[in-house]
Length: 151
Image 1 (cartoon, rainbow, N blue to C red):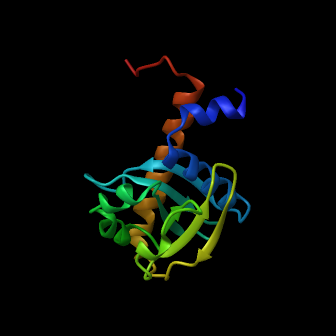
Image 2 (tube, rainbow, N blue to C red):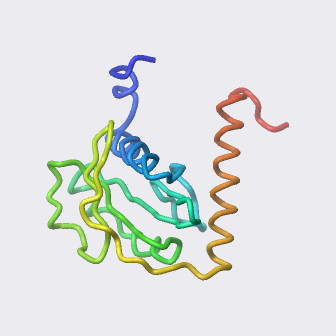
């Protein structure tokens, strides 16, 4: 699929997520999108580092998108570091300074401010790594066999 066609099918937040995932891969992090850490929460990007680090990145495509997000603080207990990813036109001064900041587009990203580290408890880390693995495996299976419903 040509890249320009792909971009017309993806929403702005998905394009930011793509750039974030590409950038993090260059640092040996692997990523999944739209992971549910617990009922009622769905993170845009979860990244798993080479030493088991768990990062959550929320992609905000507009001021309204950010202002309508009332759940973000619930994500903090599910990661070692938390980041916002926005494009270069986003008013970054709106974002809480106690979180990380990534400037992204559809092709790449740059970490502007590292999110503070608050290490997960070992039991919570195990749960998140298992959720990551299952989510990734289910996504791969769906891509490999898109018509199968499991019946």
